[in-house]
Image (cartoon, rainbow, N blue to C red):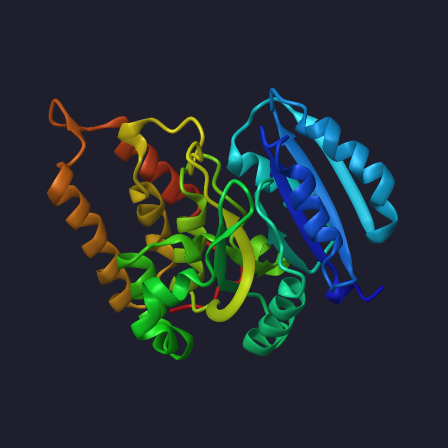
Length: 302
């Protein structure tokens, strides 16, 4: 085994008993050989974890290593952090427990990561195919529809990629393939924040550690009952905290200005969160997250 090539496929499992075996079978069928598989059930109330562990007992020999555990419900950020911290791979491939992996996806992502970052830390965004509840293809390439006119610009110009994430956040940017060194450098997912994918995307692009590749890296299931962030209240349905928290990582004034523009455009529409002349607890929590995560170890100076 070449440790530098090992990919950790991590699955935060939550109430997907109807789909998790299909997810696992797609990973099993991957043409990439050096895989470890980690599953963490986040307090599901269905039989998904039992199904998954039974499947693992029959298929574990296909993988370099397998790991599974069940915990009380802790949320997606804490669950993902625990999965990554228990992984041994050089690369991290995160997949929901109802999605599928195309056969050649991981191989293509590893090759693309090595080409883009030359063995250094970094995060890749990639294209996805959408499927329905019956696993039928809805749309072959989501990026082509959403970003078609400037897909090439996103690939060659990091500022264009950054602005696309800030102003045109869509499904493809939620899907990220990264090195474990990238995760360690930015200290994982802040557990106080919603929209961890926005935070990771903005940190990566703010620090020039991101790239977009036209690889179909996942089959993303769309369901009528799918919640982007389970348990999220309507009033919380905004990524504004993640955008605040990433400000200290922006490497130039242009990117700081763009993030601030997005933030103030949001507050212009929704009002600043003040109560009785004092900053609300939401704003205070934003400040605490910024203060706690304001430095990245060994980050190049601006």
